[in-house]
Length: 299
Image 1 (spheres, one colour):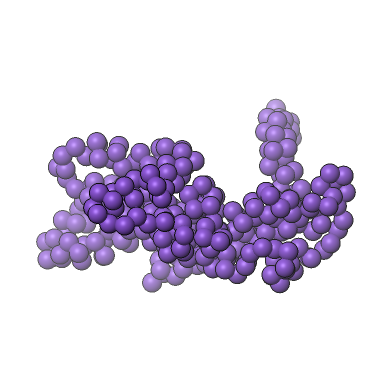
Image 2 (image 1 turned 60 degrees about the vertical axis):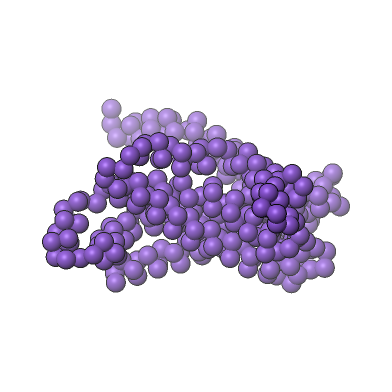
C-alpha cells in the first residue's frame, strides 16, 4: 500500500466524524456568525428573511441602544468580578483541601475525598435548583437557620450584595472539587526528597510551601485555572436558576443576558453578536492568562 492510498484510507476513516461535526458544530457556529450581521428578530422570525445590517447589532450593544433593556457595561463588569472572585475561592479552597488530603497518615482519607468530590458529581442544574430553594425567603434552609438563631430572615435576592453572595456561595460549592482534584494529582507528583532536603536546611513548612509546592504545582494548576475561568465566565446555570439576574438584572452575566435577548425578546441577531463578543473576550482573557503564566515561569 503506497503513501497516497494510505492517506486516502485515513481520510475515509475520519470522514463520518467530520460530517457529524460539521452538522452539529461548525454549521450552527457559522449560522450564528451570519445572524450577528442581520436583523433576525421578532419582525422576521416567522418568514426567516432577515436583512443584512452590517455592524448595527454590535453598535447597538456598545452604544447601549434604548431597545436593549440592560446596561452592557455593567453586565461585562459584573461578569469579570464574578469570574475572578470565583477563581480566587476555587483555587484557594481547592488547593487548601488538597494539601490537607495529602497529609501522610490522615485517617479516612478516601472517605473525605469521596465526600468532597460530590458537589462536582451532581448535575449543575440539580445543584442550582437545590441552592435556589435553600435561599428561599419563606422556607429556605438559610432563613430557617436564622430563625432558629432568633435572627431576622433575609430576602436574598432583593439587594445586589446578598444576591451576589448567594450565587457566589453556590458556585464555590460547585467549583472547588475540580481544583482540589487537579491539585491533589499535582501534589502527588512532587518528589518527597525535595521536602526532606528543605527540612534538613532548616526551611519551615511555610517556606517549603512557597519555594517547593507552589512552583511545582504551577504547571498543573495553570491549565485548570484557564479552564475554570472559561467555565465560570459562561456559567449559565448558577446565575439563571439561582438569582435569575435579580435584583433588576444586576447579577446577570453576558451569557444569561444573551439568552434573554432570545427568550422572551426574540432578538436573535443581537444575541448572536453578543455571543461573538463573549468569544473574543474569553480569547483575550486566555491570552492574558497565558502571558502572565509565561512571565511567572521565566521569573
